[in-house]
Length: 505
Image (cartoon, rainbow, N blue to C red; front, side, top):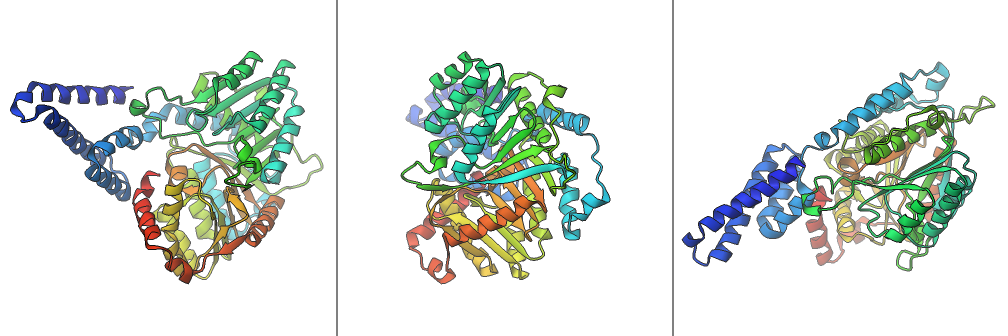
């Protein structure tokens, strides 16, 4: 609010000065407007420089403001104001940390647990403990759900079994066939006495109609939006979106991954056709961390605290004493001191001894990740990148391809998925450690969005992810370095322009 007031006061003061001195200017109206935007651009450029951002992002904003003063001015007001991310979400960050420490305590691991980790991967383990703050569970069952049919079938099945509560958190929710099917089931469960809470992102689900929401509320479902945007130009939080996809049923079962709620995720969109995506079913200890992430997001959106034993005591999956490998749920977001998921991706890449396999629909890496991947490939590792052939966001599509020449020069093998649209967000290192979740390999996921990923250490799910990746390669074609170099000139221009904007994406 304070930043909004400052911007409004600044604009009013400048406007008053221009109006008072209008007689000094020939063609006072156009002159006043020109001077207003010139002063505004200079002022904003000064503020950007004082914020000590990464030099690449600073220079990008200065280029935008210098090249398009009027458009750049409004674009900056909507998307560019840093306003100290940690200060914006400081209260949430402190509460999240306190709750994690209080509920999870200091985790203890046996020698048997630690033997499941390769020596080269213990650095990831230590880093995840220091900055992720959530425990690694060796008593959690996970199942990889490949594509929409498997995912929604399992989701609907588990929701129908709910006895106590259902917690939903999604970036995109659509009022279409699958959206209606889920809505109707949630209404049915709410009417039967199950507590249903539904958190959706205000920007990601901006097309969700009021009728959909009213029907859920009328049945007793508590449904709220995350960071609603009422006045976009003066809303400091518009650029920080909740990209998480979380479901928790009765505290025992959870889901996390890449699929939102919409028919396109079932391959029902003509443009995209087959939709290739990956989700994860979770049962046991690690569900509690997913629950905590949801409950803290819910508290941020509603001021309602639900930290009670009825929501934080999951049943264990290993009643027979079976060890499932390590499972850790990691939340990343602009409220945290460290760029958690980006740091863990970096650690995974630099720990690799044999292979790094990445699937991402949006590949716009920052300098650290970009350099780490090139160094890994130049060191002789098997580095593979799987991306969609067909774009859904053209500026991101062209920006990602601007990185390809350097990657291929370093020895990275790049594949385009041709069977449909690739939306999986998967990283697998040495066929031992993997990440699956909501975070893309791009700057928005690293720096701006609230994300959540499952990190897996020598679980059966890692084997499934490897098998799925190999199958995806059969449905893809490698990009030949020589062929890519001869792409049309206009495409190279688009890529270069998009690359300039990549720090803003």
